[in-house]
Structure formats: structure tokens, C-alpha cells
Image (cartoon, rainbow, N blue to C red; front, side, top):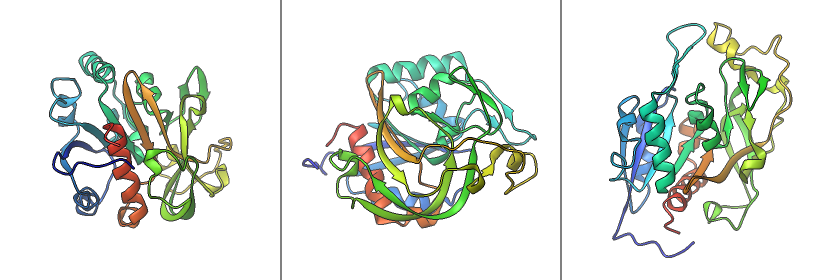
Length: 265
């Protein structure tokens, strides 16, 4: 890790909402970071900052949200982004604004294919089209005790981490765009459909069900980096609840990701 200037703190905007979480426990993660100041803004209000002028006060944008999906209906109603939002977000990428996407943020804006390309993967709550191919809804599994392997030990986002560490967290069986990313973390869990539950079943009244859901085996990758436009992008799939929030390794990982995205390593 390079020299960190704590006298010039980083400012981080954290966009939230869309998935239940324990706010105080999640906030404690950011409060533990020395030299990083955070501001929480809920969707849809955070959309006002998704353009170069609106995002100017912040060095990095952190997404812990799930916009574009209305869960008040069964199945959820999908909502497209406005043209102004898309234009502003594209301008942010061209300006080089660093971004970190956490956990369920990979499910955001399902009707905006380019958004998934920015993140490097997709989680779908209903069958969809992804990169020109029909795909099934994604899978989830709560409270999985698993081992995380660091695949790129020399990457700044992995600085200070052991080569393997335990987490207890929710895992996803989802779409990962392997050719567009730099792998960072993998899990030793089995990413086959018999170890996961259908997201579509869950949002149509059948929680913890994988009947009639022949989802193919998926990627074991749970963290990666990439670039989009001139921006550094990091996706970290861990982040479901207090067990993960309290992990010293998770906190180190997220702090590293923020500093790397801000180009402050």
C-alpha cells in the first residue's frame, strides 16, 4: 500500500436502499475508516448526484442500492432509467469518477444493459436477456459459511489481506462477465443450482425454493475490478449483513477498494 494522507480525507457518497439491511451496523463499517468521510443518500434521491456536477463533492461513489425494480408487485415491476440519468452517468464514467458496487447493487437497473457492463455482471430477479442470450433468474443463498480466496494478492484492493479468510454471508448464482474483468476474489462454495434458491420464486411467494429452476453452474468469482470509460470500478459481492460488516477482512477490503477507486494508493 502506498502512503495515505490522512490530512486530506476522501469523501465518499454511499447510495442505499432497495434491499433490507441494518443501517447502523453497515454505517459502522465506514465509521471505522480513518481518513474517509461518508455521506449516505437513499435512492431515488441519490440519482441527483449521478452526473459530474452533482458528484463533484465526492471522490468515490459507493453503491449499496437496487434501483430500477419495484418490489411492491409480484413479480417486481422493472423501471427504466431516465435518459438524463443515463447521460449523466456516462459523463461520470468519462470523467474518471471511481465507483465501488457492493452486494445487491449488481441487480440494479435490469432494463439498462450498459449498467451491467459497467459493473461486470448481472443478478436477475426474473428470466431475462443478457448479452443477447436468454438467461434464467439468478440464485441466492443466505448465511453461507465459506472461505474467500484472494486471486490477485499484488492488487492494491487485496493489500493487507491473507490469501484466504472466512466469511458468513449471502452468496449469488449470477451472471459474471469473465472476459471484461480482473478477478480478485473467489469462494470455495459450490455454485450449482442445487445449492441456491431461485430469485424469481422468492419474489413470487416461494422463498427458499429451487423447483423447476435448471440454472446452469455459475462462476465462483465474488470480487473483481475493471475500468469503464476512464473510471476505476470494483465489485464486491460480500456485504449482506452484520456478520460480514464486523469482519476485519471485509472492512480492509472495502477500504482498499475505495482508495483504489479514488486512485489514492
